[in-house]
Image 1 (cartoon, chains in turn red, cyan):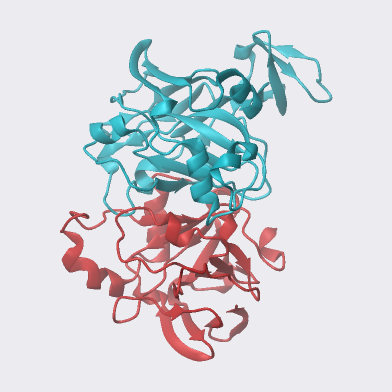
Image 2: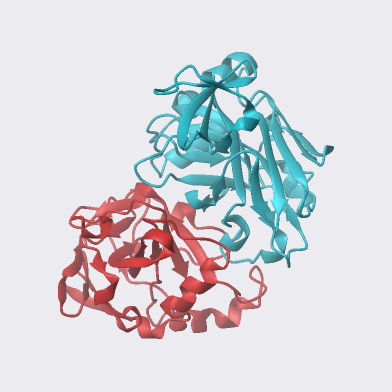
Length: 210
Length: 257
């Protein structure tokens, strides 16, 4: 089984969920009815992190020279096995060029070479209570964010059910369950030279250090 | 040469087009000839070690942008699709019961032939392995203005037929000069509903390869769907939709429940 391979590397398509934390949803709610959105999203808002973005834990992510800072999107992600079952969890960093508008697909912000840090180890989903996971995000050793999966708009099974209404996850596919924002609506930022690390309490093997 | 991937006699095979038939090319059936209707057609794409990148263009023909009341984009409007959405030639696509407007989109699909990073327009065709036809269905009822076009519209199971052939890039370049010189057409139950020409793309194939490869490295087998011209109409269950591109192929699809 691929979830026992070390280091873990996705073989399927990596999907991600946007706006899946209540804090960001609530901050943006007043603008949702306005142009260009003209209404709150009814179903999960998704994006894809293409294969060129995968960077194994411990390696450097190269930031393009015309970009001063990037968003750090700490995510717990599910890995799918046969029959669209969830078999494993992995920590990933959905790196993005900061972008305010969610109107058009974020390919040029999110699909840049190297822009997905992938945790070295995928853990069996049986060992994880997904909706109770708390991630700690550290940049240069300083804790900058705590991400609590109890605070999602759609709990993990609800998210999966709503996506599965129109598409079937293939064996090896990955779903990023969402990254939270800070109180100001932005995500933690990192610039060239910064190192960051995500940890789940009591599970050292889950850290990403880049 | 036109390449196909088919299922027949309990296994998947590589084949090429030969005098109106399929010619199997590999052991144990190398040399075997089959009629087109004897096989199940799969997407004409060799397996890749990790899921391929599928880039798709929105509003890349000025007339289609106008049809949908958008001004032509100043840079490529691109979205990404998952490989799980692909199905082959002569397959069945599911139409949701509650949909009121589901339409085909006939698109020239570029199949990358070798690793492409920081490619310049002038050399872009060196990185193309071949071309095929994609029908990138959309269900307008499900459009939402969040990362639009959103996945419920554009990443649905069964909603991206592709094929029947992967045509070697050299064949298209030798015969037509470039892929920017091909007519496109869609018929619904035999009636022409969409006709256009690849020369009317806003961003042509070399421009797209330069644009994408500037920030994302493309691998062999990755796909770029280059958008559709105007003439999209609603289709119903039972309709037979044929999306055709000159020199590339006629991709047949039927809508089912």
